Structure formats: C-alpha cells, structure tokens
Length: 307
Ligand SMILES: Nc1nc2c(ncn2[C@@H]2O[C@H](COP(=O)(O)OP(=O)(O)O)[C@@H](O)[C@H]2O)c(=O)[nH]1
Ligand SMILES: [Mg+2]
Image (cartoon, rainbow, N blue to C red; front, side, top):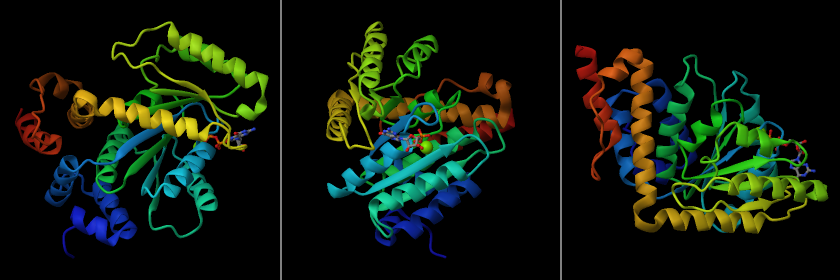
C-alpha cells in the first residue's frame, strides 16, 4: 500500500486518518510513522483544546455542544477521548453522544477514543503524537480526559488551551486549590449552570481560588458558567477559547508551548524505554525552530541504547 502522507489524509479523510492513528500505535518507531509525524509537526495549523475535570461534571455533553458549534462555523473537528482506565466505554459513549448531537455521517468530524495502554505513561505519550497528527489535518482538535489523578497535567501537556470543568456543589474549587494545579487551566468553567444559585456560588468560589495565584505566564483565566443542557454560555466559552488562542498566537507563545510539550514527550518515551537511568543519561535537550522532536528522538535513542 502507498505510504500515508498528510496530503492523503486530507484528501481521503477519516478512513485514512484512522489508519494513520493505528500506525502510530502499532509501529511508533517505523520510518513511515516518523515521516508522517515530521510533516505533521511542521504543518501544525489546527487549534487544540482540552476538556478536563472530574467524572460526571459534564465534559462529554459540553464537548458535543462545542463540536456542533464549531461544525456550524464550518471548521473541521477531531475529538479524542482519553480513558486511563481500561474500559473503552467512556470514549465509545462520547462518540455516540456526539454523533447524536451532530448527525450520523459528518465527513468533517472525526471521533476517536483511546483506552489505557499496558505501560504506565504510555497513554499520555500516545495521546500527544495523535494530537500532533490530528492538528495537522483538522481545524480544531478537542481532547476529553477522564479526570482522575494524573490526567489534568497530562492534558495540559498535550493541548494549547485547557478548559477545566467543575460542577456546582461539588466542593471542587477547594480540592482543586489543594491539589495545587492553579497553573493548569486556561479557561475555567462551572458546568450545569441551569442549577441556578449553586452554580453562581461555585463560579465565585472558583474565581476566588484562581485569583489567589498570579500566574507566571500573565494570562488571566476567565471563569465562566455554562449549561450544555440549556445551551447557556456556550458562545461565551467559544469566545474565551478564541481569545486564548489569539493570546497564544502573540509573540510565539503557541510554538514555545508546543516545543516544551515535545521535550516532555521525549523524556516520557525515554523514561518508558530506558527507565530512570535512561533519563539521567539523556543529554540536555533543546529543540531549534526548524527541528522535529520525532527526528530528535530517533537520533537520541540509538545513543542511549548504545549506553
Ligand atoms: N443539569 C445538567 N446536567 C448536565 C449538564 N451537562 C451534563 N449533565 C449531566 O451530567 C451527567 C454527566 O455528564 P457527562 O457529559 O457524561 O460528564 P463527563 O463524565 O464529565 O463526561 C449526565 O447525566 C448529563 O446528562 C447540564 O448542563 N445541566
Ligand atoms: Mg465523558
């Protein structure tokens, strides 16, 4: 079969994209995979958003609404549901829900779920390469994680804009401060705003929690209330995401963020393949403007393997 190129993914659409993603999973080190990822890295036009927050907070429902909105705007969309538990159900459910909300056969919408890998850390690493590929093909990529443990920081290391979701009455704002992840969200959302005063109170708590820390990057996190059910605040959320994208576009912030993610990804892959000792032997990494992290890793691995 002819090699999968970005041009082919764009012209053949979803079936070719699905084949490319399974290539990433099955043959991550193959020359064909490397070529595809190098090209994707250099043609990274798409915006990448991430939805994170505890299970049940309303992420999938909100994802469905956002996707419908973006499709109405004429933007092509890829959705990735990341489920660190071994069940595939979460992602499949998301797919069903989104298809229900947007119509069954939409060539401009690609939905894919990723379940746990056997090895620790493997899922996050795979998610990132999938995101790199998808953002070269689609206008928007949305990643939904099942909010347990590591996944908040994992999603921050794969996307441009992290939308952090809490629900009314959950005491989440407090937990969130305790967890010390105030640097993670780029946009904060209280879901289920149709629940009334409880939602407004949660929004105030979250605003207060976030204002206690001035972020080093200088971005002021908008705190919004939305209801996916009653379609409240969706336009405002979209506008906040667009504003963050514009902010990232200023002074090369997006490229800097993506380069940092790339270096983290290399470290992750090295840790997975060579353990802690491998990491310690890793030479200091930097990624020049025109370099691809995939080629950098491919050059680094034989050196580590040689010891
Ligand atoms: N009242 C209300 N319920 C919602 C809203 N959005 C989602 N839900 C409900 O919350 C539950 C969990 O939603 P889901 O999207 O699966 O959450 P996820 O686990 O974060 O993906 C479901 O029963 C939804 O029907 C909303 O805007 N208002
Ligand atoms: Mg969900």
